[in-house]
Image 1 (cartoon, rainbow, N blue to C red):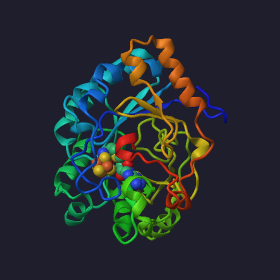
Image 2 (cartoon, rainbow, N blue to C red):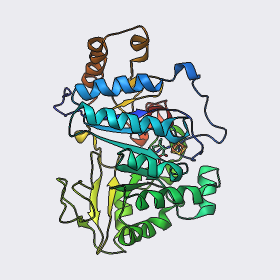
Image 3 (spheres, rainbow, N blue to C red):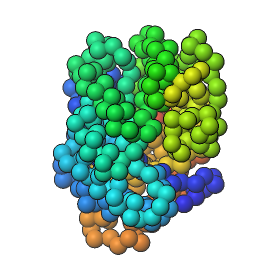
Image 4 (cartoon, rainbow, N blue to C red):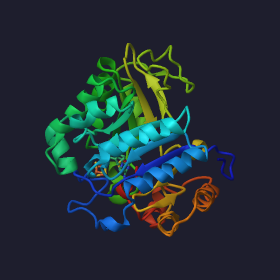
Length: 346
Ligand code: SAM
Ligand code: SF4
């Protein structure tokens, strides 16, 4: 599918829950957020039908996210079933998972056997006390076990999402860079976005450029080509380390993994946007930074046929804006999305 600006839209991020076992400071308030009643959350069969339909419309990249996807009962079985369905729908489609890692260790092996290859684990610190403070849960060992399990089970690539926060974890940027030299990990440094609790954290904002400057203390950053430059990234069997996302990717000297920067704010990356987001309550979001949404759950539960549902996908693609309005000024004026990442599916 192509949107009104000539962008190819072939990536669907599917949030399967708005619940989470952590309370990251930039995402959720300490006492959580009002949760949707279970009846409003799409059932697994409904999610499978919509993903199958999207595959038929040309979507090739699928990511399961949340909230914390693994906090939903039956999620591991669902991921395995969906992977199987997408494989049968045709060659070339890939499924990945974004998780905070704390519940991943015990299911890593089963999911790998079921065919899941790619995983993104969000980890903003290597320090247990800092993790406890940032996420309001003392679960760093479980999160790290998730990372180790992903490596042990041969997931490829294993990406680490690191949200840049000045005065919080900027002192660990170099350490995460060195991690890519020691282990086949692909660290993505992400600019803090004015979404959810992130709206109140302007002072902690740090640009990707500043992070890159700090990282170059570890060594020169060798740029990687987007088109799967396997020669530059020998650990990545046939995959572009960049994947389907908006990161600028580099390799540090002798590194087994890569580093990448997602400059959501300082360099608008919208020109390459290729995605729609499906929320757990069945709304399609054309843009992460906008509250505009298209309802799929209503028609789905009213017995709509595939063509009627496909029309909702087409309308959402057609409504993609050229660019987000997520600048700090827009956030201050209350113009950005009211939904938080845990809702929309980051
Ligand atoms: N719970 C899972 C996790 O943390 O990986 C999946 C959902 S989480 C919303 C997806 C990603 O969004 C995480 O990497 C998280 O760090 C990121 N995120 C959440 N709020 C953010 C914000 N305000 N700015 C930047 N990234 C944010
Ligand atoms: Fe949960 Fe992920 Fe949000 Fe952290 S970023 S509170 S792990 S949904």
